[in-house]
Image (cartoon, rainbow, N blue to C red):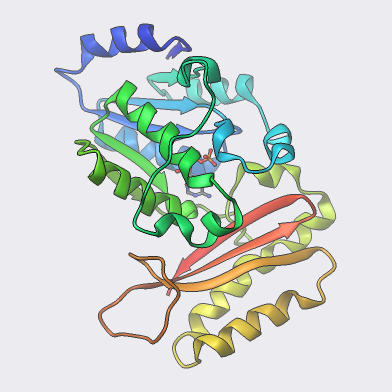
Length: 279
Ligand code: AMP
């Protein structure tokens, strides 16, 4: 396994392998878990070379405390990646990636960026767009792997690829869950044992929403979800939405030929967890 933190050295190496190899890329912020590993496994199945990046991108954090407390486990991440035969790991530093000016560019993603996470985390998708565009330009992979866990991000990356005419296939990967349904997330490591016992309610709720969606109205479902969290001393609801999967706009009325998805964001103390489900 080759580990690069220098952009030029990585590009130099890549220039020698592009011609004969299909390259798969998995961008991450580290603190790797089975969810990340499932993306890497899918890349390894389809590509000759798999590159994983580990970079905690400062410009996508709207909250400095969240950035400071974000789990950092580089050493054990590298051990895990080595053990699963990852080919290349890219661990750049912020100044190099941002050419010494750590600010996000502005993007227009046709309104996708203003829904849900965009509304609750100002500037978040400018940060995501900036880093992913930069990583795509540096690595120029054939395929890039993103989790449906961050479904809004996935849709935004697809828009980014279209806008920039990148010749990169975006591969969507299913949400990987703990046995009790909790979506795996690096932030889960910050949960106390009391919080950990309570958080399976998040998936339980959206699973029930999937049932309710067959017969109930959106407003009935909204109220039911709000009630689930109203008196909960540990979990507080940030938002719950049912949207059209492609526009991410809130559902007005159900149409037969459209795909819908329910999205939820929950605060557990200062830890924010998100999840979603196809309806
Ligand atoms: P992160 O390190 O949180 O930025 O995530 C890196 C990539 O892994 C993103 O494409 C995420 O959507 C994806 N990912 C994170 N958690 C999961 C999960 N539980 N299942 C599938 N993909 C995930």
